Each structure stands twice: as C-alpha cells, then as structure tokens.
Length: 189
Ligand SMILES: *[C@@H]1O[C@H](CO)[C@@H](O)[C@H](O)[C@H]1NC(C)=O
Ligand SMILES: *[C@@H]1O[C@H](CO)[C@@H](O)[C@H](O)[C@H]1NC(C)=O
Ligand SMILES: *[C@@H]1O[C@H](CO)[C@@H](O)[C@H](O)[C@H]1NC(C)=O
Image 1 (cartoon, rainbow, N blue to C red):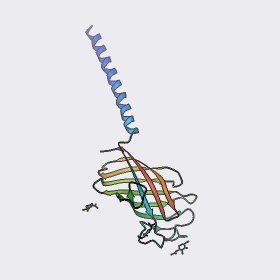
Image 2 (tube, rainbow, N blue to C red):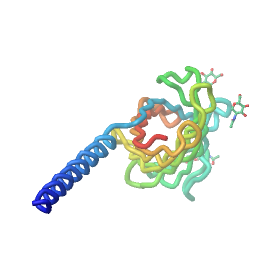
Image 3 (cartoon, rainbow, N blue to C red):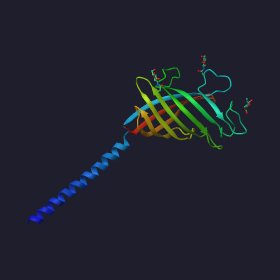
Image 4 (cartoon, rainbow, N blue to C red):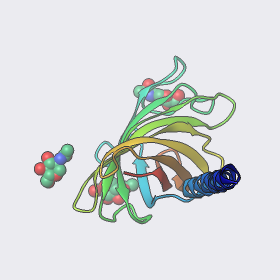
C-alpha cells in the first residue's frame, strides 16, 4: 500500500516536472521572439567626391585597379572600400541634433549588382546613451529591408545581441544616402 502511494506521488511529481519544463521552454521561446530593447536611428553618409571636403563624412580608401579613390568604380563599385564617421540622428533630418556616430567601413563586394558588406559601431556619448553597439553583415542595398547582426555592445549596451533592419531612406546620386536603422536587441543586460 505504502509503495503504491509512493509511486503515485512520484508520478505526480514527474508530471509536474514535465509541465514545468515545457512552460519554461515556451516562455524562453516567447522571450526570444520579442526584443528586450528596440531603438530606431538614422545615419547619414556624405561621400567625398573631390568637391565636398568640408561636408563629407566618408571617403573611398580602396579601389580596384580600374578605378580611383575619388569616384566610385564601375562594375557596381566592386572593389571599393569606404571608411565612414557618420552622424546619427533620431529622425530623418541631417541637421537634427547628433546623438552619436556610426563609425566603420563598407565594401562593395559584387560585380553584377549593388551589394555591400558592413562592419561598424554606433558610438554614443551623450546623457541619453553611453557606449557602443556593434554590427556586421551583408547589406544587399537594392533590397527594401536588410538584416545585419548585432554582434555585441559596450557601456549601456554591454553584451547586447540582436538584429538591425536597415532600409534606405534617401539616396542622392553617389554622394549622400540615409539609412533607417531599426535595432532589435534580443539579449540585454
Ligand atoms: C555643405 O556645407 C555647406 C556649408 O556649410 C552648406 O552650404 C551645404 O548645404 C552643405 N551640403 C550638404 C550636402 O549638406
Ligand atoms: C577617377 O576616375 C574618374 C572616372 O573613372 C575620372 O573621371 C577621374 O578623373 C579620376 N580621378 C583621378 C584623380 O584619377
Ligand atoms: C564623452 O563625453 C565627455 C564629456 O563631453 C568627455 O569628457 C569624454 O572624453 C567623452 N568620451 C569619449 C569616449 O569620447
């Protein structure tokens, strides 16, 4: 009799444990679907073109043999490397207060179409945010929205991980572009 009730109690606890595991798993999955932090910024890139030394915030530093570092190369700019120190704003106005800098480089890495690869940090040093958010990934420019990885962060964004969705908000010739950056962090500390 005693062993029977003991078995029943054990089965009960076993079921409880199973239930607990599955709810914990579901909760964990849910947590991963919803960002723990969401931030939207715009960054503005003004490429040096030989005439805008004062305003430009980026420069071609590498070019294929058939190009030069003043004008982006033919073949969809394949082989160009651009370094930037671009202002970040909260809205899409270039003249809005700067809340940080987007610093890094992009390379054009396909002859057949416009596509690039970006490695950059958003660097913040204001009362609002201090620290960095770091990004890398492929940026197929002609696609309406592109996802890059948020690989880490420092300061207010220490140990952050997630995804940033980029979209081209403006494009003026080969001198100015503005990207909307919708940052979704799925790991926050
Ligand atoms: C560049 O700077 C000059 C002088 O500050 C300004 O008149 C001009 O509008 C600027 N150009 C751009 C594209 O912001
Ligand atoms: C760079 O290349 C462009 C187009 O290929 C050409 O018009 C320009 O003169 C070149 N500039 C220099 C400094 O070589
Ligand atoms: C951040 O801003 C403060 C105050 O303006 C300055 O003292 C400090 O050097 C800045 N830090 C960095 C990393 O730029």
